[in-house]
Image (cartoon, rainbow, N blue to C red; front, side, top):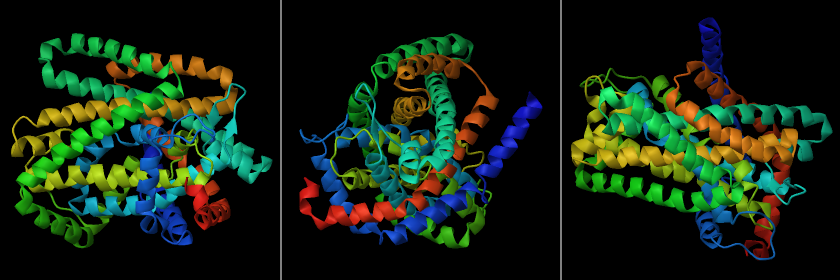
Length: 458
């Protein structure tokens, strides 16, 4: 088993390495950005206006969730531990310049998410029970034709497997680890872990067994609250250290193009490392191109697909440009990244705590809420893949099994499961990227139609 695990780990390293998935995601993102004439920059304020109006759904439009709740369900899965621990990892391994390259992935990723959400709504289907289902498997099947159905099936299989690992067990493990290590003495950790596993089982079950509408309702409340807690806390830290913020920005930008020499406990980094870890952690955080988010956006109550596409565009902006930037800047102004023996797992906590004592608890609470919301969002993704593969009758059994897996992840240390889920999460991107490039003319046509008539904006 150890040999198999090592083999999977090696394949995972290749897929997520600098020569396969990362350049593919970036290349497709640049192609879509240029082809759509930099829509993410031109229509950003329009997208925020659509988000504000999308808090309520038009009574004559079809769908399951309001546009805002569909976005929040997507963000529930996107805004996760990567926004806190992932940023710390990028800085420790790639230097401050890694934050700049995270920003770049978000800017090109906005066009990718725009296309994903637009296609998801345009090619979605309605099940016999009235559920609105969409995502890469549906826009591959309905957009590219029956000869590409095998590719849609591949995506659905990859997404279903990934939902149990990257969207479930790893998040439950993160929640348990943070709570237990923060409040329990070492001799009581085992019992506390079991208690936390039981609590998570109940909380997740209450929400996910109710289906996508209940998940959307919870996400619509939880995501804005948890994001505001973290962002406001981070802004308070930056205000306290306001005199160091300009220098932090300059260091990030300078290091992105020159690397960063060893200083304090930081071992130093090159430009290549800054790009590699900044891009990798940025893509992993905002999931642009992986094909997960469009499954949530497909549930939106909208008439024109581009309207939800604009909200999809906000995914990477809010996740990376806003939340990840808070983490990165707080780490920079605190100086904790230069401390000898700095660990990614607690670096952000130490950064907050070093500026204002007691604020590490805000980071811990944020980590817990981020991970919990990720479980909810990924339940929607996995369920959509299961419905595509086995029909709507499999939705409830999937949600029950998904809930039962949560306590397993909370108490277990299964490195093979982590590696497999990470691998399948990356493999989801390949069918999706192929479809995005081939269906780009459809997105361009829909975009022109939407902006040619203001009636579509209602």
